[in-house]
Image (tube, rainbow, N blue to C red; front, top):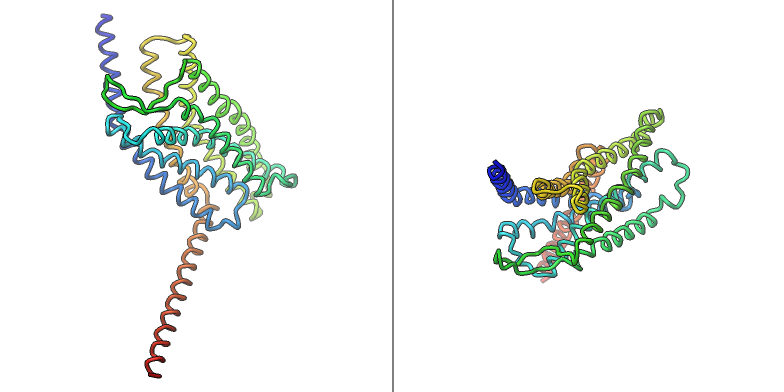
Length: 342
């Protein structure tokens, strides 16, 4: 009976891994395409209207940059999976791709936390902004977050390498810790930085944002208040989708920590953690391609800005076309005058 159960478990595990292996390239290709198109569009809108950018726009544009960098690295893994995990891009690219993907998560969480704090200050303390609302301060904070994200992703450079696996006959790009304690450090770091610190802050801000939106008559009647209310709704939706996409990953990180301390053990748990971590990671990656569409669907203010940006681009092209046409006309008239004089 035990042999039959083990055989069934191995069979189910093999079938599950085959299904994940088959779906990986297609799923990540879709995420990559949508993420590149969507985040590029968001960045174009923010860049065209750079003079009118608010502090929240600076934070959201940096979030779009982080998402765009992450989805731009996925084609390397798609090609590797199709090539049966044989890495053909060299060790430097192995480290760069890994550090960019790891950095994206840290930076995304911190940028979203800043956006929620900014909306909270705008709605609840509009007269106490001072220097914290200046764009130069926002850019300095964003630069600091990028530095922190790179620092926290350093293990990808230190321990990620390309090594030949004789059993499989491939050169694999994988992470090898010097000892198991590094695995625990990673779990603790990502739990503290990306969950224990931001979640209470975001929850506090979101609660008060929701409270102000429901109770303030000024936000419902005034035109400016309406814009702020729409921006606050957009922030709440983006935050909710982010945590829904990444919460399963944190749950599995917690289970992996329990497995490290032997609180949970056995083949079944190892199977659940392996399969679950893969699925949770892909669900988290999808968040980078969802954010731009949330701006368009929920953010009515963003849609208005996108239309204005499109008008500006079309007006510039129209002016360039008129100038080129006028210069061509002048050139033709000049040539005709010269031929007449001759």
